[in-house]
Structures are given as structure tokens and as C-alpha cells.
Length: 450
Ligand code: NDP
Ligand code: 2IT
Image (cartoon, rainbow, N blue to C red; front, top):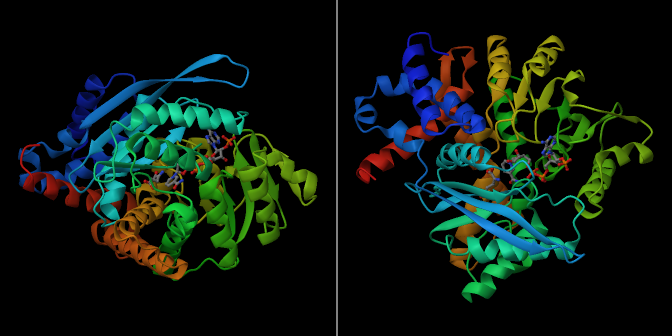
């Protein structure tokens, strides 16, 4: 934390805490931003006098609603649905939907807050939002998932629209759920619009959207390594998660000649000393996307691997890619990474690193890419899906992938511009926060006290 502004930062965080009690994840995301933005604002009077940071911490709107549904045995079930519409100064609210039993207002507000900065960094016209439900898709039948999605959309459809708020997937919401949600929106409104992204390729989805978050994270890490005269080839990589982001991070790392040795889920992690190659990754995709099984099944097929409980960060590596969930790298994990001489940590997930872990990583000058910069490729490609839907066109994979690469390169340049500390060190946390902030803040100033 900046020593000079320590008091101002603490006071601001206390103010946000008093207005949002019992929301630790939201407070964590705000604290991380305040630590770099308050010193920046102090040098820019126009932002200070307009209370921009205070306004950024207040969602424009939050909706919470009941989601009743019936399971396959005829039992009546109830979940809670949400949409946090955080900021629309740059465009329609944009951000994913998360279905996970842990979902609550604090988690969705942290995600929506991060999304505002991330979407700004993409340079596309996207505001920020996030939503979801405390629904657990694990062990549910397809029919149950469909009924839940339909009930969820009956209520959510009142608040979204192609020019208003455009959801997408996140944890627990993939191609299957997006399909059911889109189908129900279309029934209710009787219109075929780009109201949700991550759609199937046959009905308005964009090529490369499925791959975009993972690919983008690897492109971003490549830019960072290149700036340090290094590359991905032969690097030992530890990846966490085994869902969408982890799978495509692994795919691109393999393509670049790196060796991925771990994947995980909430039960534990697999360590494959020989590395996860293309064939093994295809099996993981089958396991997770079709069979919807546990990652531990991997070791039944591949004898080079072992399964352990916990998280993979004690496995020696050159590079780490947390791609599962928030706060999955704590102080002890960060100490392992430093001790094992890990050179860089690149966040595929949103806020996977705790504040204590981050400070250890930064004190030891490891390369560190904050998720709002490094995982922005997913939402950026959602933005490209919206453009294609408006044009009634579908671009080729090469075209979308090229644009994704250019967007990640541009985000990297902006992080360096605002985050360079000295000749040898770039603070990407500061760079991403300030670069994301400036665009949103200027748009808010231009639009008046809204
Ligand atoms: P998926 O649902 O496809 O996969 C999530 C993975 O993370 C699963 O392996 C899951 O394991 C694991 N996981 C989830 N919760 C926990 C937990 N509490 N503890 C341990 N492991 C957990 O989600 P995505 O891959 O889409 O999302 C992963 C991360 O990336 C999230 O932080 C998300 O916000 C972020 N993200 C996603 C984007 C996207 O486009 N999808 C874009 C940008 C960021 P299990 O099956 O056991 O639950
Ligand atoms: O966290 C994220 O950026 C996402 N889950 C993707 C959001 C989107 O609208 O594509």
C-alpha cells in the first residue's frame, strides 16, 4: 500500500465497508483498486472533485429475484437470482452469469466492479455488470438445468436487452446454459437479438469465444515475458481449474511449446509429471464438458499422473495460471511459488489472488498479471460477438483470433504505459487499474453527475 496515502485509502475503504457491511469480496476488490487509484486521483483534481471513485463503488442498479423450479422428482425448489448493473458509462452493461452455491451479493458486486475496469481496458463500448444464482448445477439432469434456466430468464428478461444489458457465461454457465437462456429470452420477447453472448455457432455465436479467455490469458503472458526477453517454450506451467478458462489456457500453452503439469477442480488437483498433451487435454474436455465428471478420473486413464487434495501451487513451476475461482492463491501458496522460483503469475480467473498473497508476489518482484487485464479476452470476444450480431455477419476464426490478439497486445501496452515503475519493473496491477479507470472516469465526467 502507498505509505503516503495510507490514511486516505483506509478512510475510503472504511466508508465503502460501512455502506456495504458483510461483503468481504466486494471490499477486497475495492481495496485493491483504491490502493492504486487514490494516489492517481490525488494528482488529478478533476476526478477528486467529482467523487468518481465513490460513484464507481455504487452499482447503478441491483436486482434480486426468486427463481422457483421443480426437480425431476417433483420437489419444489427455490433459488435466488441476481443482476448487478454496475456502470453503463461506456456501453450496455456487460458481464457473465455465475451459477454456483457460493453466489451472493458480495461475490457478484466484486465481479461487477472488476468487470467495469476490465471492459474499459478492452477499448470496446461495454459497460460492466454481473449476475447469477446460488444454484448448484452439479449432479443436475439436463432437464433440471433447462427448467432452472427458463425460470431464471423469466425474471432476468425484464432487465436485459441487446442495447441495455448483455449477459454471458461464467462459472457453471457454459454453452448448454447459454443456449437454454437464449431460447427462453427469445420465447418471452419474440425477437432474435444479441442479448447474450457465448451462443452456439449456429445461432449467432462468435468463433473463438469459447477459447477466448484462455487464449487471451496466454497471449497476455506472452507479451509480458517478451518484454523481459523471455518466452513460453519449455516452461513448466501449473494451471488450476479444469473448466472453460483452464482448458483453453492449457490448449494455447501446449501450442506454444510449454509443459502444463497440473489441472484441478474443487476436489483437488492432478499432477502429470510427463505433461498434459493434446490427446490428454481432449480427454479432459470430454470428462468435464460431456461427462461432467471429477478431474480425479484423469489418473485412472493416465498412469503418469497422481491426484492430491488441495490446490496445485506447491508443485514446482516456472509459470502459474490460476483459472478456477477467487482467492485460490493465499499467503502460503504465494510463499510456495516464490520458494520454488516461479517467474510469473497470470490470472485467468477473477481475483484468484488474496491481497496478502499479492503483496508477497510484488515484494519478490515476480511478474504478475491481474485478471482484469489478462482475462479480458473473453469479454472482448463477447464484444466482437455483439458487433457480428449487429452486422448480421459471422467472421472467420482467423479474423476473430487476430482481433483478440491485437486487443490483448493493446491492453498490455496500456498497462505498461500507466504501470511502469522503473526501467526494470512494471506494476501491472497499477497499470490495469489506472488505464481502466481513466476511460470510465472521463466518460462519467462528460455525461454529468449521473
Ligand atoms: P467453469 O465453470 O467452466 O470452471 C470452473 C472451474 O473452477 C472448475 O474446474 C471448478 O471446479 C473450479 N472451481 C469453481 N469454484 C471453485 C472453488 N470454490 N474451489 C475450487 N475450484 C473451484 O468456469 P470458467 O472456467 O468459465 O471460470 C473460471 C474462472 O475464470 C472464474 O473466476 C471466472 O469468473 C473467470 N472468467 C471466466 C471467463 C469466461 O469467459 N468463462 C472470462 C473471464 C474470467 P468444480 O467443477 O469442482 O466446481
Ligand atoms: O468475467 C468475465 O469477464 C466473464 N465471465 C465473461 C463476460 C462476458 O460478457 O463475456
